[in-house]
Amino acid sequence: MTVDATGPLYGSYDRIVSMVAVKPIPASWLAALRPSGRLVTVLADTTLLLTATMGDDGWAQGRIEWDRAGFMAIRNGPDYPTELDDLFTAVEHKDGDKIALGRYPVLQLNECWELQSMLEVTAPGIRHYYQETDDGTRTAWMVHADGSWACAAARGVEPPMVHQGGPRRLWDILEELRDYWLQHAQFPLYGVQVFIPPEGDKIHLVRGDWEFTIT
Image (cartoon, rainbow, N blue to C red; front, side, top):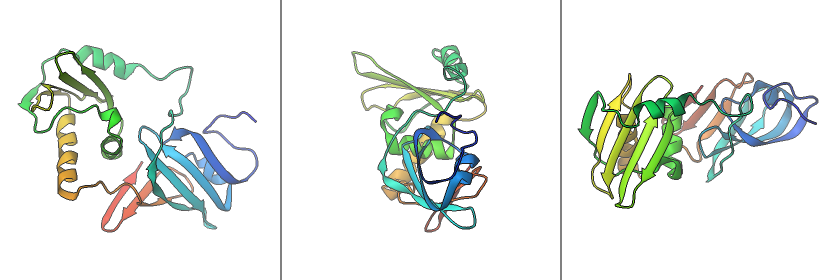
């Protein structure tokens, strides 16, 4: 059977295991899942593996697993939109509205799964680019569809010079998360409880006193 990944599913199922990443959870998946049925999927643009069981009230409850996983996000059309690539090209060599010395070494965020996932949860939609030259200079760019961008460059693990522009300071958001990591030695994502309403438009995360809603 071939169907639109987010469109209606025909029939009802005891198991829905997704081979694409989604965010939010398609309401059609939840509607097709029988009570006590199991859902397994990855949240788009993260490595967060979500498992949940459907309840009699239409809510699915589960958790973010301790294991990591990654799948391509669903898309409409033959390829992903290129708007962020165009923004990256426009700001690649641009001076920022704010220029300052960063506090942490430049990282390749797409290889730092836990940090990148936490960033995507708290500030969704950021695209990352990275370059490392033969002399050891690392450069990382962050761009967002709202026009916000950041560029940080340094040799090795030296503090980087950071340029930022647009309505938000993306590198500052990243550094706040790295502060949190140093204070707590972990992010509150893995093992967190998950509650999903029948509409699938929100994913409620709860772990102890920490709560967050993904929309």
